[in-house]
Image (tube, rainbow, N blue to C red; front, side, top):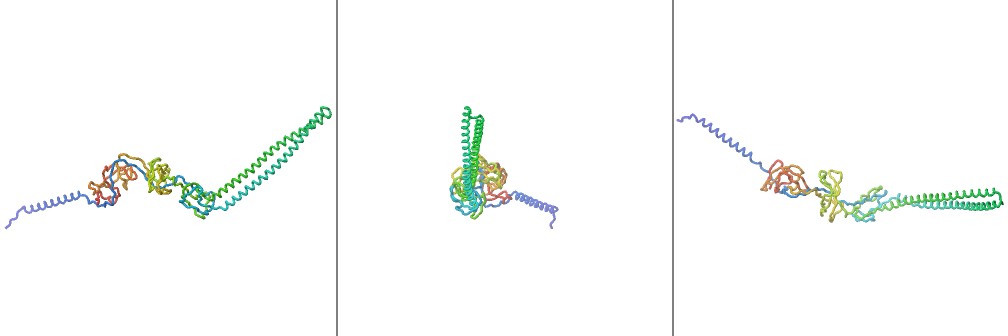
Length: 417
């Protein structure tokens, strides 16, 4: 017969508690170990990322602007008078010279006024001839009167001399001498007055003829203007170049001052670039620029900066200093790069899609195995078109991912395959 031991139950409970404690400790240890394990990193295709390497050395800061080539000298041809487009002789793109006819206008009213001005000139010239004849006739009449008075005065003077001689011989009385002297005196005064009248008459003749001649000159000037306007109905280029624009159509009525054509000189071009107004503060007149025409690069310098911004950009003119490549022509789209400054011995990298000046970002840096990339905090400095300065977070030789990785913001590590 079995005899129950008094401590058997106690030992059984102790053994159970020990096992439970061991299991609990094992679970806790497993939990801590699992907590320390890294989360599974997502896999990113290598072809979808844009890698870059951090380097140290010189860095050229640049600003980019899109724009077009424009002619330095552009001749805008306006309509000198109202008219209607009768015929277009040449089209845009044609080479032109000073006398090349571009188009012709018509204006019947101008033709009538020109003809009327011509007849007015002829009528005024006829009036001048008639006035000249009348004034010459009046002058001759006055000369005849003057000649008669001169003759009478001469006779009176002779009679006076005779009477004075006879009076000395006491052959006539003194009264006769006095009468002769008075007659001579009166005729002398009339003679002086007639001579003054003749002088004034001649001055009057000159003044009247001058007035008539001035009227003729005015009418001739009007006639010249009308003829010039008639001639300008045949619109000519006025300079050597290329017809760049012709914004009118046959039959169109154009008022005076309307731009009829635009002539440019293709051998003298400049570039007009549009630079973002947030970046224009570092652009200066005289800075070196490179203009890419897609068929060659032309060196140049910034020559002018517009004082005001339009639609978020500022217009920058670049004077071209190199030979124009084939195909360079006005209105050609170009890509310009302006050199701001050269930095020596700085850490820099190709500019990522999210790289902004003086900003701090988190981006992926490759591990040494080149298969995984971890997120690091990077502080950027000054920027250029294609590069950006690295102030903190990266060292020369580090390889990073430059493309947009915003879809992996929830992960600090990715696997590149």
